[in-house]
Image (tube, rainbow, N blue to C red; front, side, top):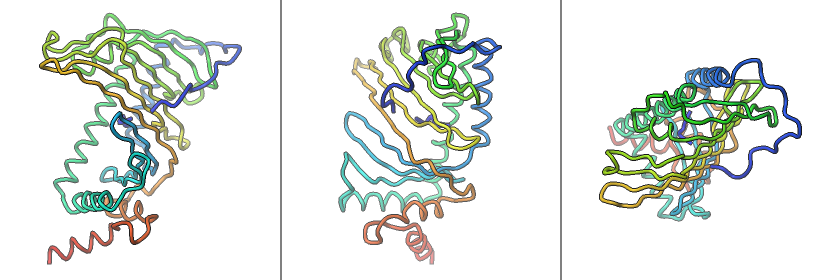
Length: 287
């Protein structure tokens, strides 16, 4: 899971009549959902998809492809426009560096693994860090409200931020999988007694997931809006949104070179660098 993970509108319209609550408590339902999510993390397939990301400074449209050696990507649009000659050259150099550098590959794998573990830790917090209550049913999903559990010992930075939130959680009634998670900071969160930094009350995030196969669910939308103050009184803002679409399965045996070849096949020969040509360059360099 990745989390790591754009909100484009209201997820679903509430049904006129709420269905009966399931025969288990809201807390137990969340435990079963978390078990399913973490188990999926260990057995997921590999996918190819589009990512549209937006920050106050830049928007990108990229195509991602997951391989056994980590994800690989190519940029199609920057700020709504195709890459110019300089941009294509930078993409070529980036891909060339990745495919020819074991150290860079190891760094990216470690970064990817760290992100996955971080998301896993946050998901694992859900059953104990919050108290839940049923709030009805919408479009085949149980809707739950959550608030911080006052007995939860939040010690790490991640847990302190997450535990300071309240919000709503949507769970697939049929599959017991996480469909949507909305959270908002109830209070300021300080680090080092406020000397090292502070996140301000009112910041929020929204995560939405979609089923892409009989067993796999992927993050479809993510949006984050946080404001705070860093050390030396620098004001910081984190505004980010991401939309993923066009999920298609790929062979789980792909390595980075084969993944890059597949990813760049749709580009005209005059406008891209293929992984095959880079491999040839690499072989020539070692002769």
